[in-house]
Image (cartoon, rainbow, N blue to C red; front, side):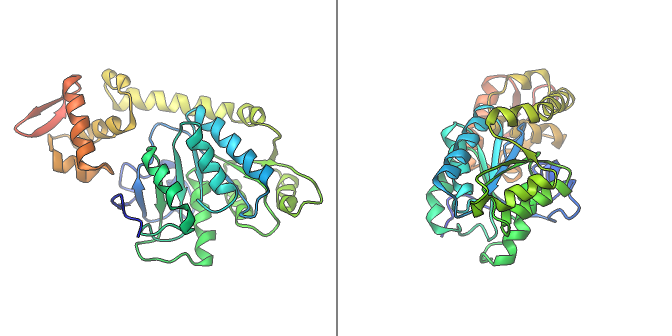
Length: 303
């Protein structure tokens, strides 16, 4: 059983529920989370066939690595082939990645990716699913989860997609959601690219290098950076700009929005962090003067 981390149920009312998911026509009414959904980051998904070529997997790994180096969160489905290569690449790039599963989070599917799942969590990323504990990985659920892969992402990159594949569904759903879809072309005789070429014919953006992607998402990055800056100015004190990690930002956000001092237990219940991690960061925040403590209850220093 895969249970090294707590599993949290996230509803649309939760501050951790991604705003992009709320924009979908059929958003999940809830989802379950292990680890963290990194905040203040742009999410881009990478999808493709399970039966990928060596070249396709290397390309996915390279693109994911370079996205991670730009502090972009890589999203995929933890499946064999392109998905696993994308998660690997993000980790190699020192970044964070999010996996969306089609089964309950008490198990990892496929089983051979349990170690990869551990690495995702250890790096500060997350694993999510809209299916409760005990739900097996049924065929129709993979198609349902694909809308979440695209829905949580500002853009989707397709690498090696046969005509009838889940990655085609993900790309089409992304387009319906008004998100960017980037597709790498390939040899016309290779079945792995039949769906990719069809997506291009239907209006997806053809890309042939990482530089093409950066050029095309430059406006997304600028828009995101502007939104992030405005959000920080509106919701956080100036001293929050000095915080160096997502965990401390989550704790500070919870304390500010609570409007009343919180106990350690209150903070732990409101985050996806382990108790020892919360206590450690509270100590750092106290030492840095970001928060104050009275009678075992914590609040922002400015409150």
